Image (cartoon, rainbow, N blue to C red):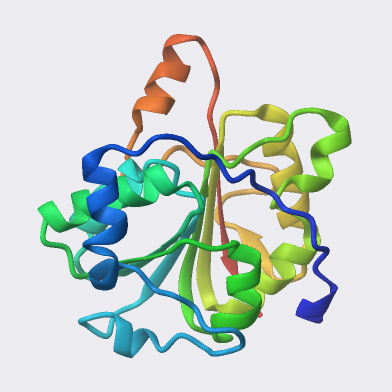
Length: 229
């Protein structure tokens, strides 16, 4: 299961726009405190970048950062690493983390696939979170979805034995693809019965985005699996 076979297909679009003063402050003035600038082919030493040596949970594509911020506040016993390319979201999250004096949250503003391939050690992550990733709803764009067999192969290598994968989506077809991809993988096991989605765990905060979807009658599907290798 070589990491080299991952296809170079981006699962994201780099959005740009005007930044607020707070977002700029987070991106510029506070970056040295919360940001990580990966160096090509150099593994990130979590024991050095985080203040405390604790289990590390990775979240990819955190958007505006609301749920990741709340988790970092609620779970000081865990270190959180967020990867996102959306500058406004990155700036906002860093600014809010500073306001809350958090020391268990670090941010990378790069392509998550490249970071995982080059900068994250094998057996170094205790959890992987992917909430409301771009569903790329058109059939011709499904290949852009980040949840593919190759990506999950790599994720299994990076997670410790017994580490968790928690995904959530409001797009039913994507939920079905996630379920199929995880269940077909040799190393991932559903924490519930086969083909069974999980109730939203208390630790995953409900975002404004999710509440708006609920008001519009949208469903949400959570999947929680463990890595067993």
